[in-house]
Amino acid sequence: MAKTTHSNYSTDLENLEFLARIANLYYEEGYTQQRISEELGYSRSAISRFLTAAREAGVVEIKIHYPMRRNDKLEAELRKRFKLDIVRVLIRNSVAYPRMLNHLGALGARIVEEHIRESTTLGVSWGTAVFEVANNLRSPHLPDSTVIQLIGALGTPDPQIDGGELVRFFARSLGGRYRILPAPAIVDSPDVRDALMNDRPVRETLDLARQMDLAVVGIGTTNPSMSSLVRAQYLTEDEVRPIAKSGAVGDVCAIHFDIDGNVLDIPIARRVVGIRSEDLKKVPLSIAVAGGEVKAPAIRGALRSGLVNALVTDDEAARIVLTIDEERV
Image (cartoon, rainbow, N blue to C red; front, side, top):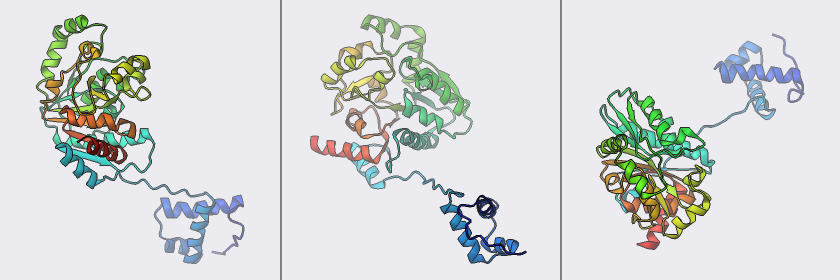
């Protein structure tokens, strides 16, 4: 084959097409540089230069998808400090918050897959982090498993992260059954709450929840700008501020606690329709999935509360949690 000169190949359309042809053979067809040189009649060093030029001209873009890396040292420190059964700490590498939550969800999903069995009863709360666990599940078909909604519906603008839809999503992923909690998460008064808690469908679901083997929960914060209840438009920022002033730093299933893990008997607690703190503390494996620096005080409180015994978080949040704990112990 006669050789042609490609002195201007980085800008000339014809030469860009030539570079694309070589790049296609190398990157997509799997040809070696030697084979390309033999078929096109160029030296191997010329093919190497053409491939470099293809990258420089933007004909080829190389993206590296790093696997999720974990910080073993932080995992060990958290496990020891808070006496946790399982800890996963993602090395965040400055990825955006939504992508970080997806990675945390994937780590949480692997824990679920390792511990779920044919007849497991799995309880779930609500929120984006919990959704990402369901979204990343690669579990086998478990038709005898049951997924239970642990807190009433929030009626969020994004229904896929609400409790009722999430239990359906988990059940579809597992091929199992589900039980919804047919009530709002927070009602207007303690009397309404008591009536709902004694309503048969609600009572039966919560009775079943008391027998669960495994729970996947998010951790909320009382920081008004980041409160899940505010973002769900369930509470206003003005309604969250008194909760924070009472000493609450966060919640699990709308069970609020202070930074030292003390569950708080505050007015909103008597209006919540969902699992009780004493029942959540008895779950054999309760996995909290939460990340981001702003969640650190809430994560520390959750770990000290006994409501969870496993944690999936990121390294930035983990360091702050440990710092807070050192300052308060």
